Amino acid sequence: MDSRRHDHRFAANGDGDIGGDEEEEEGGRLSKRMRPLSPRISSAEIVAEFSHHDHAVARVNNGSFGCCPASVVADQLNWQHLFLRQPDEFYFRHLQPSIHRSRSLVRELINAAHLDEVSLVDNATTAAAIVFQHVAWSFIEGAFSPGDVVVMLHYAYGAVKQSIHAYVARAGGHVVEVPLPFPLSSAEEIISEFRRTLDRCRADGRRVRLAVIDHITSMPSVVIPVKELTRICREEGVDQVFVDGAHSIGNIEVDVEDIGADFYTSNLHKWLFCPPSVAVLHARLSSVAARRLHHPVVSHEYGNGLPLESGWIGNRDYTPQLVIPTVVEFVNRFEGGLQGIQQRNHEKVVEMGKMLAAAWGTRLGCPPEMSCSMIMVGLPGCLGISSDKDAMKIRTLLREEYKVEVPIYYQPPAQGDKDESGAVITGYVRISHQVYNVEDDYHRLREAILKLVGDGFNCTLLPSQEDRLTCFFAAREMKS
Ligand SMILES: Cc1ncc(COP(=O)(O)O)c(C=O)c1O
Image 1 (tube, helix red, strand yellow):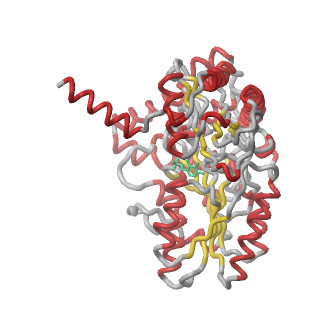
Image 2 (cartoon, rainbow, N blue to C red):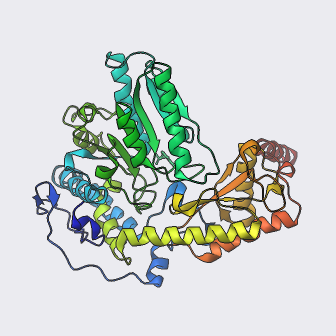
Image 3 (cartoon, helix red, strand yellow):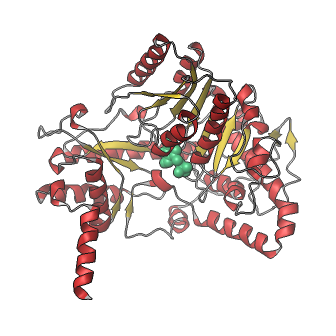
């Protein structure tokens, strides 16, 4: 890893200069033409950057949709005006050099060996489609045989699981899930389950063509030892490894060289302050498969390599990709840059998680070192969460009645731990911490749950969404 990468406050040329062609590259890397670093951001400026948030809401859910500061929103608007002012000039003069500059910055963030490995796409879902489309074609064209395996974690993101079925299983692939325990007490539990699954595939005489490994699982949220699992895949002869790091950049350190997977994706709109939507797909050039990737939306760039194919997929709004220099400027205003933000978010979310677990008499879903800027905290068993629907009902209740936004995970009782009262913990909140959060956000969550417990609330008391709609329509009919 070069020393530049460790300076998380490198200048990003985010001064509104949009030509892009003077940003020279040295051997494929950004030039070291450093600019004076931006002044440190003050607490008041942080508040101003997120003044468009609904302050009535305690938003402890950065994980789902991320956030975008006002300075980045303003930059995006400038780009949109530039396009609307003279679209042809924008397209012929600005668009491609600007995407190129953004890719160069992202390349630095993830320590990619070469710029040609870095494509900007809409989101992690799109990146997954690109990889799975390639795998599907490998089955269809006979490079893979029917019944060859794709391995994924049981806790893989729902849309990614569906995508594997839609592309790969339909083309003849056999899908195998790695069962994972939760709550977790060590990364070793994940590693041994993963090994056991590969052993089973071998014992069944099946060839594993692709392993899909989350870097940070969504629900329940834990950091997966991706470097170790990728190494095991190499040892065991798994053909290709795709790491789904949808939550990773800006949340934990990402070093694609060090991880060593064939493909790695991360959203930039979750934890890197980009507007929706933009993600990176890294495809290692040394992997034969990298040159076979194509964007599923085909344009006249087809065949020119994924970075160019992804840089023009028809007439649309490309501005989320163009604000990356301003985003880098923004993070560099914080002490320690992106790394500093990550470190402080992690420390604070662990502190808040422990505070909530102590107040509710429960526990964390994993040790702090397996968490990132998100952590799972057990809810009191007496709330009676007994299905995914119940989890969603409480989430809705917290939003509507208590103005707290937090996702809730349902944990089947068979695997559950007990809370201090002896009831099985069947629900966990996933709390996030981002630079805009304050302790009061977590205190409001704590008090809302304590109030529900104090009132003797149980999920069976809540009408379902459908029941609510039925009541709503019935009430409306009675009025009319
Ligand atoms: C692990 C994981 N993969 C993929 C995605 C999909 O991300 P997006 O909706 O931005 O495509 C998510 C979204 O939260 C996720 O958590």
